[in-house]
Each structure stands twice: as structure tokens, then as C-alpha cells.
Length: 472
Image (cartoon, helix red, strand yellow):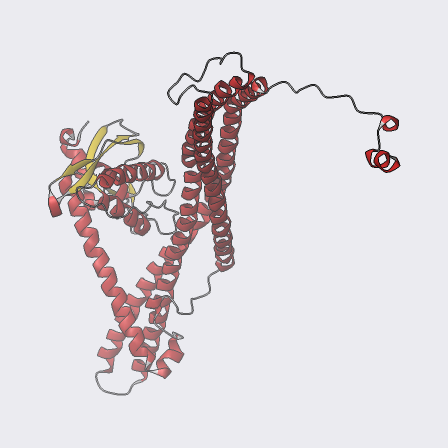
């Protein structure tokens, strides 16, 4: 079923709050009512000309519950928006990265190759997102895959406004913190040394801090090891490419040598080098060399093909694993942002509480009005601190669910990738081995028989010529 065939109820559901949100309480996490078991992407399409040129990707999805089929057209920036929204809607989730691809220059042949590479990256990203246990039911994914151009555009505008609001709020907190920095007595009361907006404030102690310290260390160590593993894989792939190049050069050199020997024997550069030359035993050299040269070309092609497959099945998966370690670092940072926000709210809560205490003790006129206002501000601050605490708790619990899954995937990927490389080498050896054996047989068959050796002269029968001359 295409977007145009949706019934009115489906369309209304998708654009509910512009994000297809399901949930019946303020505390409920926003979840999509849709889930998807298949996503495919057709060939990209380029629109416009010159500076207005852009590329769209046809993304088709099948809803798991209804088997309804829908197709939408999204730009690369839309995929980036989805990635960013998943970070917002599911803080603490380890969201796969979209590998970076440089800007596409208009009208160049390289542009088409980059579009194709980018499509491959986007396909892999979507394949992982629709089965991600924390992201598969995210509202942003639903509006991305099922939203009409209008509803998707509205969702993007709405989230852009929210993002700007968050930035403004962050700026306001920064300004407030900087202002309080000039008031030493206030800083002493709320224990805020510097702006929490910079993320460098002393964070409130959380019961699971030790767990997250261990996760941070794990991420650092894993990233270091995977980086080295990826470099080692690249060295092996490069070795296959260099081997392929060397085999081709060796083949060309031997073929040139055979042609040169043919010319020396009076056969000429263009003569047939495969026949016998008047029974001359040296003539066996030429067809043998040319035969070996042809076999080396075959080995060159096999080694070249091996390098291509090694790149795809060995090096690229390890690069993805390296990106995954970055995804873990990003998830840790998103959870830390929640902790920073919670600390800031707690600090503001204490500030408002102190202000209420001072106001209540102030003997000036209109005290009741000021106390009421201070009480209202404290109540608002309490609610915000409570929300920040729930957000931090949700992000923390999500990360603690994610890390065991992530570690299991890392182990499976490492074992699978090394096993794939091993199978490639076994297959290459099985194909190349007989060719090397054949080459050896040709070479041994072309070698002339060793000339008969003269029998050794007995030691007592040897003649001392120098002594004979002296006696004479």
C-alpha cells in the first residue's frame, strides 16, 4: 500500500503530535504504534540542476502488524535528522552511526560513486535501526518511514523549533551560571563552581556511577583495540593488493623474457613461441616461461578478487565495529548530559529553596506576596528537578540494558569477521594451490637434464706437476 492509498485513520495516526506517538500518561515513554520488519532502498534519483541539485532515496517499508507497504522519498539530510531524533527520543541508546561521506560535487563522475556509497551506508543504517530493541518503536522512525511529505516536513519543523528552544534554555542556564559566578556567597550555597552548560560542573552523586565508570573504561579500551584490529585488517588487505600487483608484474617480466629469448633463437618477436625449435633442448624454455606467465596472470586475477572480497567482508565490518565503539561513546555522553541537566535542576532547586527561606525571614512589607511568588518558583523548580531525575533514570536504565547487548554483538562480530577471513584464505589456497603445482610441473619439465658427471680421480693416482718439473 503506497502513501496515497492510506486511509484517513492511518494518516491521522501517523501525524498524531506530528510523530505518531502512543502513550496515555505523562510518564509513559513515547512509542510508535507501528513496527517494521523490512526496509528496502531503490536507486537514488537526482533532481534539479546546478546549485539546486539534490538526491533523494526511495525508502520502502513493510509494517509488521498489517503487512502494509509504503514508499517515501528522503534526502540524506532527512536520514541525519532521524539519527539526531533517535538520540533525543532514546537517550542512552547505542544508535548506529551513519558513516561520513564528503560533499558531492555537482556534475562529476566521482559524484555518482559517492551517491552509490552513501546509499550503501544508508541501507545498512536502516537495516540496523528497524531491529534495534530501543529504537525500532521510536516515533521519529515511524514518521520517517510512513509520513507523507507534508507530515514529515511538519515533524521536522516542530523538532527544529524544540531544538532551538532547548538551545535557548541552555544559553539561559549558561548566563545564569555566569552571573552567579560573580556572587561567591551564592556559589557556596548551590555548590556550582562553573556553568553546568559547559558540562564541567561537579555532578551529583548517582547510585550507579561506578557502573558507568566501568562502561567508560570498557569503551575506551575497546575503541583502542578495535582501532588496532582495523589497522591490521587494512594491512592484510593491502598485502593482497600488493601481491596481486607483484604477480602481474612478474608475469609481464617473464613474458618479456620469453619473447626476448625467442628473438635470440631467430624466431622473431611476433613468432609463435609455443612450438619446438629443431629439437634444440633450450627451446623448451620459451613455452614453459609463457605458460608460467599465463598462470601468473590467473593468480593475479584471483589475488585481486581476493583483495576486493577481503575489503568487503573483513575490513569494512571492522570499520563498522570501530564506528560502533563511537556510538557507545555518544550514548555515554547523552546519558551524561542528562546527569548534567539533573545537577543543574537540583542546584536551581536549592537556590529557590534558599530564596524562599530568606524571603520568609525578611521583615519588609508585602512579605506575603513575595513569599507566595518564591513558593511558586520553588514548586516549579521542584517539578523540573523531578522531570530531570526521571529523564536521567530512564537514560541510565536504557544504557544498562544496551551494554550487555552491545558486548554480545561485539564478540559475535569479531568472531564472525575473523572466521570470514579464514574461509577466504582457505578458498583462495584451494584455488591457487593447484595452479602453483601446475606451474612447478611445467618448470621442472622444461629444465634440461643434468649433464653426466666425470668420475672422481683417486687421490693416489693424482700427479703432482710441480714436483715432476723440479725433478726434471
